[in-house]
Length: 235
Image (cartoon, rainbow, N blue to C red):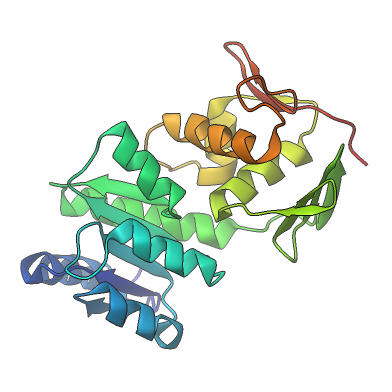
């Protein structure tokens, strides 16, 4: 990080004290910052602002953070989102991730941890798309990387950005068992500091969308004490 870094961070929080503190710490790291105190205004200005990263509070006066995440993702915007929340139960974390957030940070948090999460998300974004596999077919699944599209038996499957990346990683390694750590590293990044259960949560969502019987998966297999494997011939 240098003082000449021009990446822009959008803050969405209705607490003026938190906004002031975040702006101070992020600008001190060289980032540009623009702030909004409600979800509707942030959504209306998103395409004009075009941020490199969004820091989004869970509780806002007009919309909840997960709701805003969902709207952003339905617009096919893949800007990384860091959710700030005072809610840290597994169910709350799962809801935030399922809505499209890339990471979450429970309150209270230190400025050092916040900056570390921001830097990690931006590094993962910069590393994205490092291989050239554009179209893959494994069994009855087809993945088109350019179109960000997945088909099962010729029918579209609606996946979140992280579900897409997780499936893509499994398809690249079809027939191989990947550990939870390997999947975290390849999908979320080596510097991901969230809960390792994130992988299990996203695997459950993928099974619900891709398996005939999600409770007895045949395609997305759990390999006991080893990890996960995508079964099926690739071509």
